[in-house]
Length: 74
Image (cartoon, rainbow, N blue to C red; front, top):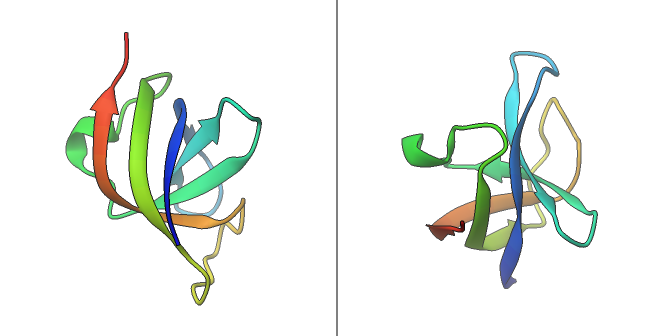
C-alpha cells in the first residue's frame, strides 16, 4: 500500500541502528532504502513510500516503509 507520511526523521539505536520516521500522527515507521539525504536526525519531511507487509526486521519498531520519494519541509 502506497502512502504519504509527514513527520520527523530519527535514528534509533536498536541493534546496528535504524532510521525511522515518526509521523505527525504519532506512528513510527521503520525506513527501508533510506537515501543519504534523509539520514539526518530531526529532519522534517514528507515521505511517499510503500508499506511492506511481508518484511521483518531486527528493530521491529513499527511498519516498514520503503522510501520511494521525499520532500524536506521547513
